[in-house]
Image (cartoon, rainbow, N blue to C red):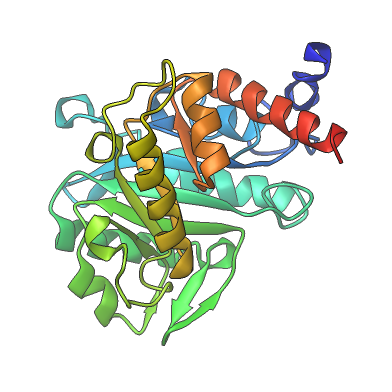
Length: 274
């Protein structure tokens, strides 16, 4: 069985650039979230080669440019959100029949704002408007799906987002929005720090009370039509199994191959039981 697991990844090798590549036959993994994706050797492309359907980039607004980095001291003028993500995504989608993945599975680009919320959001929307052809568009409470949906996290600007009649991004909610009646076109996601839910670090059984709480979070988010993600989760197969079995929508990792293997293995095993 283990020999089958890397199959999805191996078939995608050789997709070294976003332009002029042969369409990868990678199996999309809807639950897979690439945490701090920009730290990988090939931002965006490593995640796509492993079938990830959610990709995270931290940004700072500096002298009018949206620069990608985890810490302010690490910004570089050539590492912009446009250069690392938006332009390559447009080229990739063009080369792959109008989709990120051949079967049409869309992806999410989670943009974690590290600088001032309102000013960074204004600059972000101006940039995203240039890529409206590949993005989900939110207009007057309606959602028109695109190949890529942008979700704004970190230093959010809820009032500014809500006031726009047409926009190219939505907001990442927190615990305060878990039971909110705000529309899913404003808060499609709920994300929260795992440590606020549980001190369990993925070894041994998860405490029963914490598991009950986890399932409650899932039920409450899904009751509002929102997807659920935690950050700072343990990087163990035991923790990933708990999250997946509880119905958490996105599982984040810094180790792309390991999570891809885990999810592919579980998909194969689930299929064999049907």
